[in-house]
Image 1: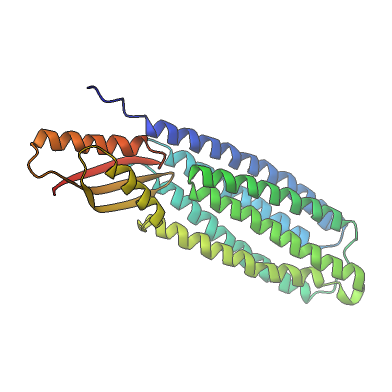
Image 2: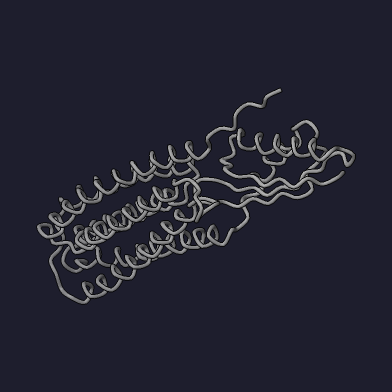
Length: 301
């Protein structure tokens, strides 16, 4: 009996990556448009929080482009120099986002402190409408990116989603601060700067979490237990397999790489054991587990 052809898992991974990359480019366009709105509103509305937010949006454009490049690179199939593929590029892209989040937090904090110490006008009330629109746009887009990242298993897309969430949070903090300044009058004119300063802690925390996850993936951190359980369930259902002695999985960008020790009848011929190993590999590639490479070792039961 001729086994069914092994699916082109790398082509499917590339399709998922391209969909994610297209979303990242839309985010670049969104950041550019919002940066223009923030600068104009910040200048004419006398609020430094919006100007700082605009500068961060411009910096986000560069980090988003890095994420886009990372996703495109990670989708490249294995070659002679990278036999396990280019998935680690996604982890590098996520790390770039983490560094930018840290940088943005420090930059906003320094300038917010400077503005707190410098007397300035009470922000215009209409800037609250601008901020409300920015928060809604950023939150909606971050949710879309997050869902796409979960569907594709992309750490870079999920990091980019958190980046947009951070933007929404800083804008939300500015909304609270400006509201206090507008209601309280000149005595509370610097409230938006205090709000921007408070938001830095959230941005820095997100940067730490994203950076830790990115470093963990590049260091081949073990995948979540449910993934290994799913792999074992697929393998033990293959005819001829008596059990799974050892299973190791690691994540590489959008995909998983599996090393597995399979127990079979010790009296089988080498050819029969080889056929079972091939069936195990094929079963894992056919399963919806984002597996792109499998190394099977046969153990006598």
